[in-house]
Image 1 (cartoon, one colour):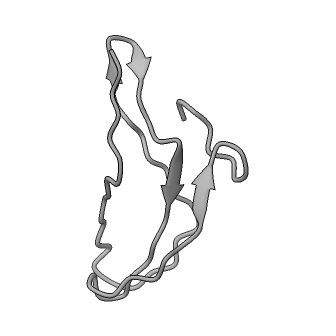
Image 2: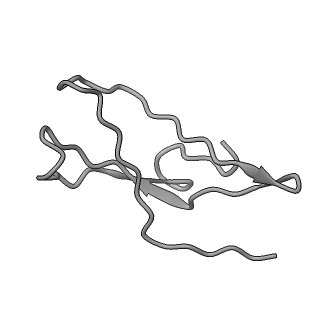
Length: 68
């Protein structure tokens, strides 16, 4: 089984402007196989409409580890 999806996004509203020091995304397992992203870009917004492109994290340069 191969699963390939590009350009998915997730938006989370804290309800107020707050600094974020860490972010943990956990994907689900399917038949004991963990699926996840090969890279993640964290963008920020103060109003949910206008976004500032953030840093891209991947398994090679930023500590994003497969299966984490």
